[in-house]
Length: 229
Ligand code: GDP
Image (cartoon, rainbow, N blue to C red; front, side, top):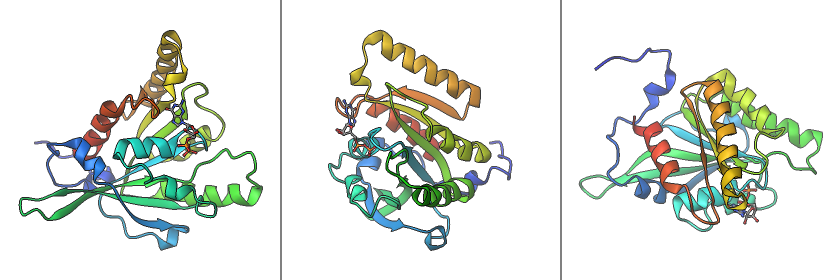
C-alpha cells in the first residue's frame, strides 16, 4: 500500500470506512444538520464534504432531491432569506449494531447568477462561497450543476476560479439533458469532457436529468468513489 503525499490534505479527512455495499442508500440517508451564514460559524473540519454549486435555476435543488430520494430536502434552502446559506446534510450508514454512523456531508451552496442580485449580495456570495471553497480542508469535491443547454456561464467561471486555487475534485453535471436531442447531448457532453480533461484527472463530466431521473447511478458512483476511494 503506497502512502499519499501529506500535502493532499483531503486524504487526512477521508473516512476510514470501506466502500458501502449500497451506495444509493448512503445518499438516501441524507438528513439536514445545519445552515451556516458566515464562515466563522462553521464547525471544525471533520468528515469529507461534497459541495453542490450552480447558477440559480440550473436545477441544483432538484438534483440533490433526486440523488437523496427526498422530495423536499434541498428546497427548504430556497425559502426567501435562506438562500445565502451553506446547508449541510449528513450521510450515514448503520454499523453492525444498527447504530447510525456518519460518513460525510453534502453541502448545498447558495446559487448564483440571479439577475436581481445587487453588488452587496454578490460580495456576500464571494466571501461565503469563495471562502468556503478556498479554505475548507474537509471539502473534497464539488459537483457543478449546469443547464445542459447553456453550460459554463458567467458565475460558473467565477466558481471554477475559486476551485482552481484549491485543486479539489470536480464533476460537471449537465442537468436538464431531457431538453436536448441525441446529437445535442453528445455535443454537450463532449464539450464538458473537454473542459474536464483540460483541468486534469480530478475533473469529470456527465449528462443528467432530474426530471427523468437519468444519470443517478453515474453520479452516485462518482461521489462514492470520491468518499471511499
Ligand atoms: P435551482 O435554483 O438550481 O435549485 O433549480 P431548481 O431545482 O429549483 O429547478 C429550477 C427549474 O428547473 C424548476 O422549474 C425545475 O422543475 C426545473 N428542472 C430541474 N431539473 C430539471 C430537469 O432535469 N429537466 C427539466 N426539463 N427541468 C428541470
